[in-house]
Length: 195
Image 1 (spheres, rainbow, N blue to C red):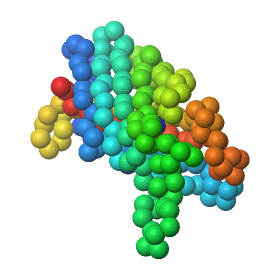
Image 2: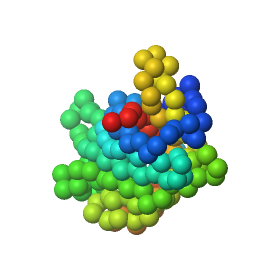
Image 3: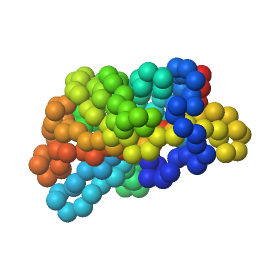
């Protein structure tokens, strides 16, 4: 399931330097899931969700880890949140039953099943996404992953940027097909701190 369009971390040290399994809490203020989707075959609409919580556990010695992220669907934002003329905005429509049905399904949840390492580098995450009560496998490719001290307060932290895609129809979200594309591209930027 953001300002995943920027480099999240500057100071880093090798993953191998992490001594033992460590659990990190996702920093909701600096972590945003975002998406893009083709609209009417004419352009690409971008959106994000303003609230994500969760935990990441890393065990670099075992080349393992886990991720659980919960995204509040009602916090969707696509740049059309409120209209002066009182008509329904795009964001309101996306919260409704045609799309995310936020009243009945307030959260979508991603749970990892496996972290995939190449040496010390985390390359991808296998997992499942639950959306609209439907759970399907979703792989996320890790384009950036670093751990190190925060450059200002010097606290330990980790950050990542991951990308993937889903077919929304797989989750029962079929409104507007095919004019509004089935494929949704995902990108999630995450910063997290030790619990």
